[in-house]
Image 1 (tube, one colour):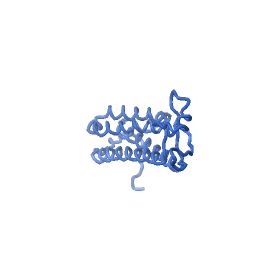
Image 2 (image 1 turned 45 degrees about the vertical axis):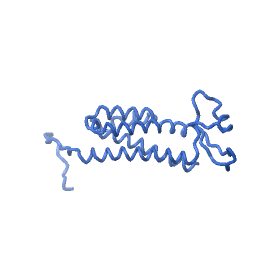
Image 3 (image 1 turned 60 degrees about the vertical axis):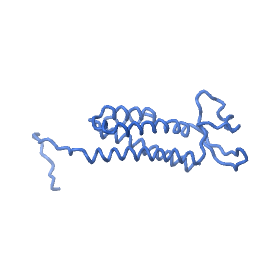
Image 4 (image 1 turned 90 degrees about the horizontal axis):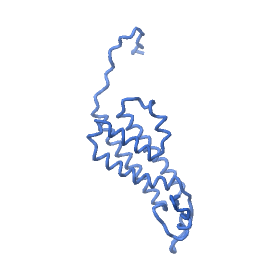
Length: 176
């Protein structure tokens, strides 16, 4: 279970970085301008952040259908992420099956969520190792989908041309 959770957290970090890079790619301001504010956000507000940047971008309008699908998957992932991140790991046996580890997420408005788990009343907040791996696979899929859009945008972008330098300051020697 611990290895599966570690993989999940690694892939969440990679996905959140990709979200930042997509936001930076379509923004006028450099990444340094908004990095600290982005880094303070949790995953839910990061989804809103990248959604707003994509909605304001003329470039991303060409990918509206793909982005709607990605954002829907992010909403599904958000709930799983919250349970996996804010939970406890237990090893139990249910319905005559061998003991196995489970991740049990804290549920809002149910202080008896661990009693429910003990009584085999498993809801969306209970994850087997395979379910954690499935959530990890969803992270990877979303990241790959963002990468595909990012690649097409970059491949079709017009190169940036520096303006003529009218400054009295010397220009670095490009032959070095």
